[in-house]
Amino acid sequence: MNREDPSPLGLLLSLFSVDFMENMVFQTNLYATQSEKNFNPISLKELATFLAINILMGIKKLPSYRDFWSSDELLHDNYVSKQMPVKSFSWMLSHFHLNDNSLQPHRGDENFDKLYKVQPLLSHLSERFERVFRPGKCQAIDESMIKFKGRSSLKQYMPKKPIKRGYKVWMRCDESGFASQFQIYTGKVKEVERNLGERVVKTLTEELYQKHHRLYMDNFFTSYDLFRFLDTQNIYCSGTVNLNRKNLPKTLTEDKKLKRGQFDWAVSNEVTWKDKRCVAMLSTQDNPTEIVFVERTEKDGKKIKVPCPKVVSDYNKNMGFVDHFDHLKSLYEIDRKSKKWWHRIFFHFLDVAIVNSFIMYKLHPSSESELKVMKNFRLDIARSLMSLGSAGKLKHRVLKSSTPVTVKKPKQFVPEEKRIQNVEHIPKKCKSRRCAYCSTTGKPHRTRWMCETCNVGLCMFQKNVTCFEKFHKK
Image 1 (cartoon, rainbow, N blue to C red):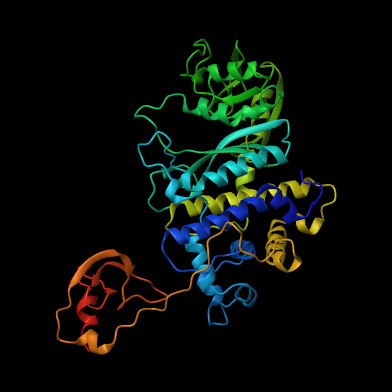
Image 2 (image 1 turned 90 degrees about the vertical axis):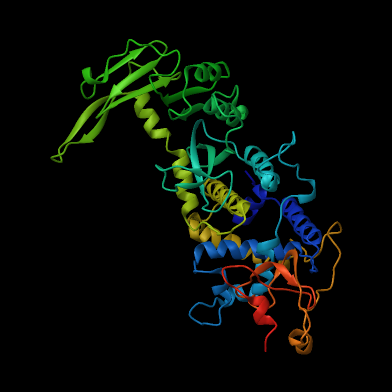
């Protein structure tokens, strides 16, 4: 934990570092150069302001980000509009980048990575989360979802989850909710995928080997072979289990023969307990014969005590760590919509870094009670990011390694005489560009057709849109 600067921003920067932000500045300027667009390179101060505005937009939500700069006083946000012009914010939203597109391996290459565009962020946060925070003794592994409804080969459909469509993320959290490790599911590598849950758990727990942690998971991950392996690494596990898994005994009492509160168990440490229905548990850390009593409410409202194996009771107390994290993240999350598939992942993990820094702040002995509320904590981070430039912590500069300044070209103008003259206007295929007739600042529209004579982009053959004809008439 960062004890040198225990402020909200100081804790966030210990996870989402200034060095990483400097690399974002460089990659953003590089991407703009590769796109052959004239632009003014951004500075570190501008990136900090851009991130701060996005954090504020998670607290004060409006239908569109442009509404913060609206001329309608009911929507207009005076504070945000003073920090950055809407054109600058829009440009950064469409151009900010994390990795060099020119170095991306092609699909089919040995080094191809579906997460290439966000891999620098994932690697940076994974290393920082492990290094900065020492997790508690009890850990849980479960899946989470990043909401996304656009087109992406990474998108999953989970009908039983609150977020049904999006990216699946496996996470390891401790009792505070701190996300110590994570892994994004990128889809099947082969037609048949075996032992996926086991591979995920082994990847997420490498840093816990020989440290005597207690680990909880559900039946997607639990298996006899996995628990035996983790036991050799001094990680003690409990999890619900499907009785049709390999190496499980066939001698356990059938569901119908068990009455409420009864349980059966077998070596090696598998327990079957019945509350309203049978729950099968596999454990390497609890005595299967140890009993506690849990309170249940009958249909008539009467409360009764039901005997329960301690392994089940401990599992129920500790399995919800990832759900606790999801709850904290849902409070004022950025939730930035975008057609670019990786933007959702970027803003999700910016939220993850904020939640983790919030948890660290609450655990810090010198933290202020007012900032132990998520809204106030996020406001303090946004306010501090806005003032970084004036405070001198981040200089308003362009990095030495960033791209050179270029002059923005004025919008091309076609004289009326040339536009409507009786000469042959020839349509021609071109790279994607704005339509000179129907495209506006508020609603940009791009086309792959142009007039070779006038040298401007014009829509053709798109749902009876005839911008090419209309443009050349009076």
